[in-house]
Structures are given as C-alpha cells and as structure tokens.
Amino acid sequence: MKTLQSTFLLLLLVPLIKPAPPTQHDSRMTYDYGTDSFEEALFSQDFEDKYLDGKNIKEKETMVIPKEKSLQLQRDEHATPPPFKKENDEMPTCLLCVCLSGSVYCEEVDIDAVPPLPKESAYLYARFNKIKKLTAKDFAEIPNLRRLDFTGNLIEDIEDGTFSKLSLLEELTLAENQLLKLPVLPPKLTLFNAKYNKIKSRGIKANTFKKLNHLSFLYLDHNALESVPLNLPESLRIIHLQFNNITSITDDTFCKANDTRYIRDRIEEIRLEGNPIVLGKHPNSFICLKRLPVGSYF
Image (cartoon, rainbow, N blue to C red; front, side, top):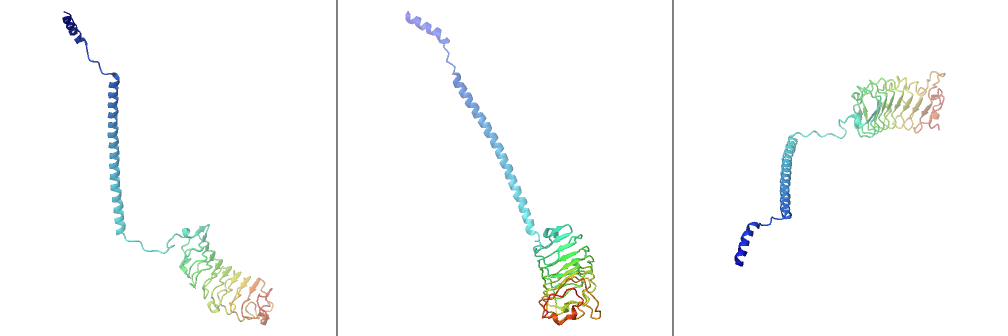
C-alpha cells in the first residue's frame, strides 16, 4: 500500500521538474566571445582589403614609374649628345664676372678672350687672365667705355681698329703682357699704361702720341725701347721710361732746340733710371724742364 502511494506521488511530481536553464554567466561568455571573434574577423578582412588594395596601387605605381623612366632613358640614349664646351664658354658674363653699376669685374677667371659686355658698361677690369688678343669686335657695341684694364694677361697682338670707336675712353692699362708694338690709341686718353711688356722703339709709330692732347700719364717702363718715343704731347705730367734700353736722347726729345725760351711747365716727373745712358752728357735736352729727369748723370 505504501509502495503504491510513493509511486503515485512520483508520477505527480515528474511533470513539474524542468531542467535548469544555463547560467547567465556562461551565456554571456559565449556571446562576448562570439562578438569579439566576429569583430576581429571584420577588422581583419577590412585591413586585408585596404592593405592589399593599397599594395596593389603601389605595385601599379611602381610598375608605371619605371616604364616612364626607362622610356626617358631610351630617349636619352638615342638623343645626340651636346658638343663639349670649355669651362666658362657661353656663360653669361654677369654670372662669370661681377657686374655692378656699369662696372664689370672679370679678374682671375681664366678667360682667354674678352667676354660679351652689357651695352651700358663703362669700366672693364679683366686683370690676371689668359687673354692673348684684342680685336675690334670686342668693343664694337660698347661705345660708353671709359676705362679698360688688362693687366697681367698674355696679350701679344691688338688690332689697329680695336679702340677706334671708343671716343670716351680715358684710361687704358695693358701692363704685364707680351706686347711688341702699340696699336692706334683713342684721342681722349688721359692715362696709358703699357709697362712690363716687350715693346721696342720700332713698335711705336711716330704719331702714336702726337694727337693725344689729354694724355697726362704715360707708363712705358720695363720694356725694350732704344729711344724716347717721338712727338710726346704737351699735356703730359708723368713720363715713366725707366728700365728700357734707351741709349740716346736729343735736344728735341722734351724741349725745342730752336726755342730757348720754351718752358715745359706741366711735366712733374720723368724717370729714366735703369737705361744705358748718361744724362749728364745731354745738358741741353732738359733746359726747358722745371725738374731734371731721374736717372744717371755720371
């Protein structure tokens, strides 16, 4: 009887027993884990897409650029190479030299010819270069030049017409070159300097200085002159002829033999030392001068 009652109670209770639901903790863990995996998957996919896409772009770019360069190289290889030029050839004068307010300074730049000058140039300093010759075309288009200085070059020859159009030229310096003769000089010169050359008397024409009525300073020392140049203008103040080969002098060299009253009052200095001449043997050659020339008298 008791056994039947127990069985009956179990049958009544079975429908009421349900399996316990999974704990919230386990469910949340599963859900969170799944979400993280999903986000990581999305991030990974997005990163790969972007990275690969960017990589593809770069690869495309790197494929295109070498093609352009290679094409350019191919063009360059087939192109005719430019002719070889010496250093300084065709370089603009005001880059090679210094141009400042009408003055051009081309000193110690190893030029072997006069460079093209700005038309407004008034002063050219081309000292200590390798210029060997001066020609008429060098200054044909530069009429306003007032001063030229070619000290310390290798000039051997100057065309006669080189300075013919330089009507304003006042100072011309050709010192320390290789000149054997003088060119025709412009009429308004006040200073001419050709010391330390190889000029002989036959290299100076009789009328070279005759019409230079503005010439005040003449420097022809350290050359190979055998005599004092003829027809020196009255305007001269300084005459340097020292260290030449001058062996003779006449009464008409500086004075006028037929005019004992003539006084040459502008001359301040004449230098004749270093020449094989005894000035004391020519007393009448200096009677018109206020000061005796510098030189040997005994």
